[in-house]
Picture 1 (tube, rainbow, N blue to C red):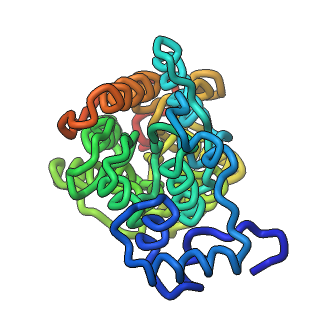
Picture 2 (picture 1 turned 180 degrees about the vertical axis):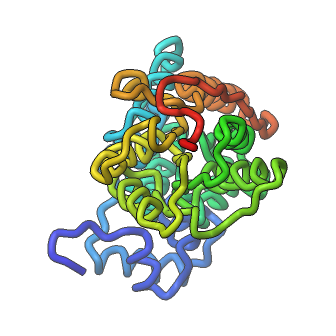
Length: 339
């Protein structure tokens, strides 16, 4: 392990020869762990220099009045709009938020979740987490209050707030088809996220419903980032028969695609049409103004905060799933294909 690198829950699990879940249960004080296993985990943690969150230790005696919010990054207006919604709702209560940024690192997600369960906060809001990880099982096992925002738990055991991603993607693709486009490229999102899966499904369904064939070559991986979105757009534009329109799975990818399109010597929308997804503030500022699918991001944050407050007030409240509607916002980045 590199010098000065804080060991993660995964590092301890590997050292002790046990599962992540066992380490998390042990460090969170879960009582149903064999004593021999507990000793093995604690010895591994001590050997690796694992130090439990200082705030967690100091707050272990009672409520912190903090709600932990795990986000992948702060360098994204999609995330900041959701955070504003959370904060606006929490200001009406006695709770404050504490932010943790994971940079899409599963080890960080798991380690922060363990620290929060250990007392760093009273509840947890997870914004677009990767969730292909057993820590959700541990949260449920310990009945720790948490809510997913813009992510779905396929087991249907998690309270969550999402938008109708498939419908939004369908409407974006349908709009391009109705303009006359038949070769529509798709810049896909991060495949581990349910929102990305649903948007790809909506794109495919619209093509099928309008009698258009789906071609894998017209799908490029943008992973919801500028750098990958730019590369994905270049990939589509360099095809022997390039698309006449591109639908990007988020606005960040769409705006990166704009740059790639300009570098390719093409004009939007004269030579190629472009649609995004999210409707972040920059979508209505740049040139051309971006046609996009609007997600109610602020409301997603507010609803997530309301749900977590409900769970704190009543730990036995039933699992709830809220699905918000999207809206096609037509601006200046689309036109019929050139003859």
